Length: 283
Image 1 (cartoon, helix red, strand yellow):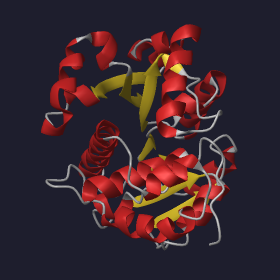
Image 2 (cartoon, helix red, strand yellow):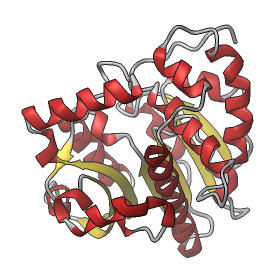
Image 3 (cartoon, helix red, strand yellow):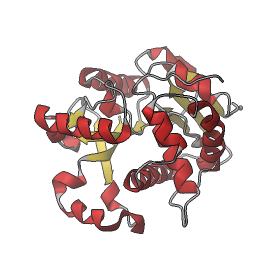
Image 4 (cartoon, rainbow, N blue to C red):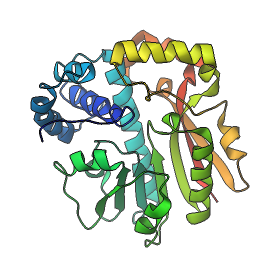
């Protein structure tokens, strides 16, 4: 691998990967993800030759601690969502939409479930250099909106769990709605766990401030901006009959001590739900 040239949104997968590796190697890690350490160590050699400012930050491990903590807490909770689903459905099927370079399968594998990682070709090409497919683990190189990928997973009886960790906010609102309704129609009885942004923060002046902050601190590209948001869980539930809200989760719900004093912001509902996770049954 001579260089890594990912689109603006796909590049966020590098940031997530490095957060996992940093946390894994910290004292009392929130998340233990040895594969992330292996991959980042290998990528350092490539990224160190790049002039990209994000790449330089990653190689030097200069990511701010609060972000590392939040990403690790989120990954741990999404692992738990999978484990809870598989406890109810030991031979269930998990589809990780916008999986990035995270390799969740070995962290949650119960020995009988099927797991699919779905992401753009440019991301999967990198991932395949470090991760091998197996009978129960497959990678799908596709846009989530190229619905041909449905046929690659629909051969299973199910039930299905679709996960979208750190994905929906970057997608056009109408396309997110279409995706959810197609999942409901194509996989009735499935579950959806998705991270969303509060639409309050997507108001033009507020969103502009947030995106400036992200670009200044993280040096993400212009296209890595939040486009989709909801005001509350009922909004998605109202998209169609049979979409049933099950539960929700915020970073601030975690008892993790590494959150520190920032946890106090969780007492304010608007901050608690700046970016949070929703869980639905698609009947």
